[in-house]
Image (cartoon, rainbow, N blue to C red; front, side, top):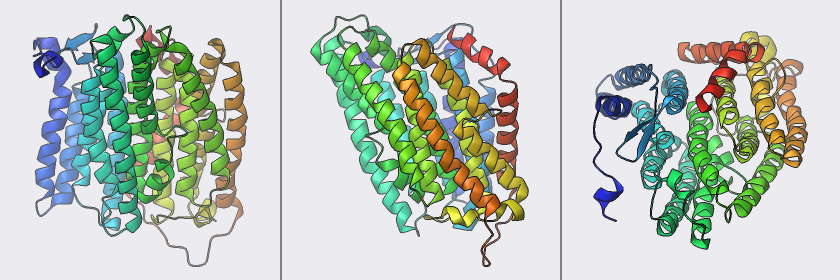
Length: 477
């Protein structure tokens, strides 16, 4: 197969042109923002240019296509991908706002803003494609931007170390994904995941599916491919950590979903893929929650919490059917995770090893922020009256309906264990006295906006989830 056969020239109809315009806007806007970031007023101009780029790109997604639009055989644009792309825009906008409140405090270079837009473009391409070779390119676009964002704090050794670890292990994940895609092409004669299920099963095809799925499990931080998560979360700045926790997880999972759906339709691949996902889900849930119990640093605690959430999401992927529960879970997780990191940004100076004890007394000194942080922690714990509870309920219900009762039992038990370490943070804020030499963190507009919006939607969808749940299910219907 030649390169032109792998990537045929698209017929740019009006619908196809509209489908690729958000990506064009992000690429051009990010490049303009990168140039502006090098000017005298680079911080302000780079931030504003990136925000304008995100807004224009999101506005181009305001009309959902009535039918699937295929572009060049590699992109598949429909109402579902528009919704996923809008969710990624939301996480990116929150990341830019949080960075605007943190960049001067940490002397971050102005180039962090266009890097968010470049990462978003890669994520959008990843969730909009079912072509493995093109997905690999999209995966590298987003990964390269995230590697730099993690290591961008040049004066922090922990940041450089985190960036290097993420780069090495991310490269390994990409290599596995690419090699698996090559095996699948050799077995099926196509890079399109949707066409692979119809090809006769072979051992080569099973091996290809396994390698691609393992590569994506690296990206989502599933056990035993999770080793990079705690160190990267700790070494990156708070806004970057929040953006990674929300956006990278969403993009990687919706690259994983179609691959798993195709693999589970193959009679030869179904058993080993089911065993791999079931073991990964159970061990990820157990390990993430148990390891979080022993953590003394707040960023590492949230890192292991993120690993546990990955396990719950794999249960939703393994349940099959429509992926609405996974999408809703990720939407609600974006709100809780971004809100939690915004609260941390308002409560403590950003330290690579910030202990949980640094939050002592915050309930009295910063009551509003502490109350919102408590709400987000309860959302991640899946307690009732929060959107996180709805997300967990939908994923667990899908697991029960699919006959995954043992996995759902593990999920429920580990969720109960997880409540303990979230409550430990709340107890520290409200039941312990603040240290005498505590450092006051000034209010920042960007942080306040993110906290307020995340709290509003977390409460609203926790109390009245019917409309958003019905809408998501209609997208997969």
